[in-house]
Image 1 (cartoon, rainbow, N blue to C red):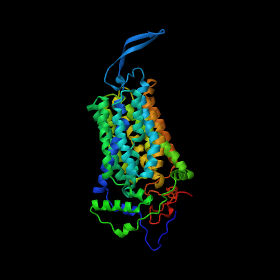
Image 2: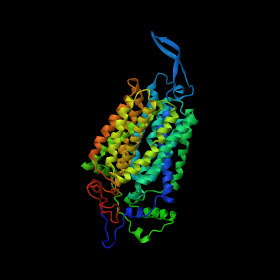
Image 3: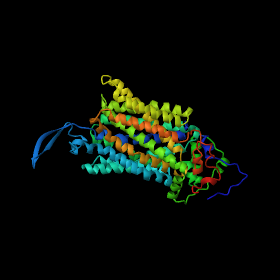
Image 4: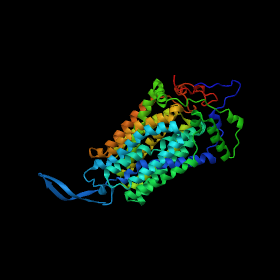
Length: 498
């Protein structure tokens, strides 16, 4: 559908309006605080199984013989109140590690639903729904007295409890291109806080059922975000809700004690393709050879990022020393990393930093197993540095993916890449089992995966200063020439079918 545009009116872009707001004033600071908590819970939900279903020692105290086969009839557990003991998982290590794998699988399948829901019904609504339901299923899991019921709740919580994807797309759309990196930094510090809070809670609340209740109950408060958080004005415009988008912008200006020219906002309109079939829109994205190739590169990034990042996190509790402190250190090391990578991306583009981080992580992970055993401190430094590099490229992957696809399908494509890429996080909980063959095998595999991720990055364009593309044609032009500004008064290019 093409809008009829008055030729004598000056066009107004959403980018120009957003550029008038400071991310350090009340309105955007409130958004940053709310999303910060969302990201913190995401880390807690994704990593708590490390402590909830932690390894527990056991010995056989009574054998039984049936049909000339001797089996253990009774096990004695080092911690009788542990997850392993209460579900009688002795000699069934695969059931313990299956918890993390099922969570990642549920997360992978759920993203295929959450992404389209966010593009269809809005970033805010998807964020609230997933946040609250994640809390509900997490608390329900703490009352499970059947192992398979627990596994079912684990899947459901991950399936519908990922508030991270819509939240991340929201924060990329509510600020201008110039301020996007700094604003994302402010919000994503929540990931680090969530990791530190998880280790602290696990230390203070050792009983796994109570730990789950402590971690998941606060998520029920996401219901109140209905009144505290606004929808993305970019999404509202692309959906044809110009009046609602203007109301959001006026509310932001009022909260910041700013004044926006009413005539200026009145020119901000968009003729949308509101009635287009969603699957046709996604199909049109894949009909573009450029975007299709870009999708497969992003898929490699996500698979590598989830496999290596979560794999290193899971294996951190096997390092020498206090497991809670090691896990907290692994989370805290991400904090300076966020500032460092934000500074790098401010002065560089996306491609070169991403390649360098992939290759640096590869070198560190491959080298770590060969550090002399009498130098444990050096081994930990290599391990932490490798984790830092993997965090770098995971953060760049998150941002890079959201910038490469058009607004109509941005969250869907981002979620699709993230979903299929969760194959990496599905496999990562099983990597500790490889240590029985050689203690350095997991690190070696992490290094080789990072190396491959670095090589495929050469296949995508380098971007940084371009506005977020709203259409397929704009997305295809990224890296070639400066694309047309998004969301002008006519939005004549809002057609997504060719």
